[in-house]
Length: 467
Ligand SMILES: Nc1ncnc2c1ncn2[C@@H]1O[C@H](COP(=O)(O)OP(=O)(O)OP(=O)(O)O)[C@@H](O)[C@H]1O
Image (cartoon, rainbow, N blue to C red; front, side, top):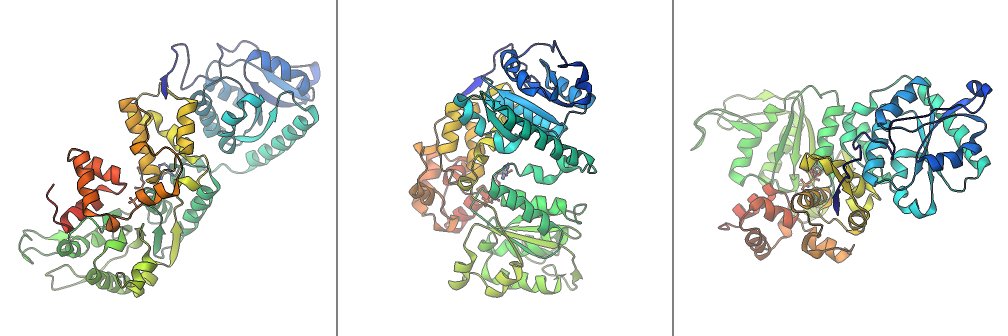
């Protein structure tokens, strides 16, 4: 599944298969007046395409390193590129295009492919390509596409450059429609200071989304404080949130600043808000109304200015109707609501995320995702979402195995239900079995249950399990 590259390959900077760039020819003496297109690909294919580009000044070159392509783009003010996708590996194409796209976002890429490579190439389309054509090429259609792309690229070039590529939004990898919409909403929500309620299955990126909102907001220079409401026993959570004075209870050996206080001037992220005990819900509601904090055992109180983002994978409306969550608090938190989509609804995002994380885990970028591995990733249901995917990639790289957890290889709704249980729905026996299977490694057990480690600690404590 994960293959080492051949020693001659120039990843990560090598582009397509080639040696040092050797030729760059213009088609005729008037070519300088023509618009310019950069064609990249194996020589035999470039020769095929050249006659179709008679209205263009055609920079037909071989390129050894992607930086050289980048230099040509700058030197000749290239607006459009034709990329011939042949037998190159995904990893090679992906990393090269990612580089060029990152350095020259205005340039439009058009893919030329053989039908036999269509499926492979399709994975790359949404991210990198303005359009694609098949061999044999229909000249007039290609001419039309190039002209259109050129015009669009020119318009983009004339706009003031933004620092889009440094945006915190880029950490939320994925090009699916669902993900694009999610990012757009995050951008909108970040402009406001109102409470946000983040919903979504476990591992879909709620925590990451909360951090992104903070980074995009006017509070970004202030702290981002994260508290997992499921991680503390009931008697400690108030102190964690509001703080305490020295000697206010047994064990309070010194003054402690609560998370709310620590978030002054920034954002407080209340993760797993659905697990907050009822009594604390009332205290939190009061704080949301008056923004006043009183540490446990203190004689005075003070005002705190922080934005609240809460997240849960629980169905809070059901919790409200079951009397487990206060309705007034629900409405108070639910001013701006965002839902992070599950990975199975994100088209090719699993592949894109896997690809972008390949080198991160091993520190070795010398790896290639093969087609069977990609197919596995695409066909699996990912009940634990991105967390499960990242764990899988990490495990695959360390152990060299591509078995999916518990052999859950196919998309299946029943599988999703089985593995998407909320922490509160898990049976003690399931938890004990997971802990035993993981040889008492709680991180591993939490992974196999698709819950966070803190949720597992909380359950263990609540159920008084001996582990
Ligand atoms: N769009 C994304 N692109 C890349 N990595 C992501 C993306 N979304 C999430 N991740 C990564 O997936 C992992 C799980 O994400 P996160 O902890 O934000 O999920 P969550 O919804 O808050 O989970 P839980 O409900 O269990 O707390 C993290 O390592 C995070 O960095």
